[in-house]
Image (cartoon, rainbow, N blue to C red; front, side, top):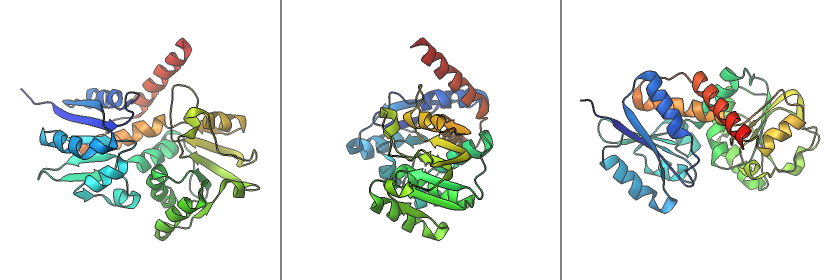
Length: 282
């Protein structure tokens, strides 16, 4: 009888996570024998919980808020994209017992934007709202697409300037505060803050989005987030949340662990159908 391999996602809070559902669907689709659970792990318990998980034979972990920087420190080896981001969302036990750290957030966003929604990034003017760990994970792949401008706006402009300086070798970026966005326009605006989940938004000028431009919220929920609503109110061609990114980054982690790349389109479609049903039944 074949042994079931164990995987998990650690974070706090974690009860809302769709990752166990996503990986169960991936495993069924690809015929992989694996189990994936969500476990509430506060930052102070991360090292002990992770060491125990791998000591008990665990094969791989996803790490979400507030553990990505701790996972970056924990890994024995880092991929280039994890090294650049200084954050890890995927840990994988290697054949020699060492732990590889990777960051699949950026490629997840890129696949959702360009493959799933056909949004052109080359030559685009891109604005990122917020200067936290999420922004660090998405800047390198966005710069690889050769946008004509990439601007990071944050209340604390110093944090935005730090990110721009850290990635200066990859391409030109600008950092500013929200007040400096007046009279500027962008083709793609990405919300990398979690504020819109609680109904809050930075002070955004109404004319910030170019005609035909798109909005993308890295956060996701069963209801439209405040930023998705802002995009719709400002006539965005696409106003999307991060559910597609969640599935795409999970597919990349699944590939790292299992060597098999699952199809994401049917999973995204199913999850969208489920949350529409949840919204209708509320």
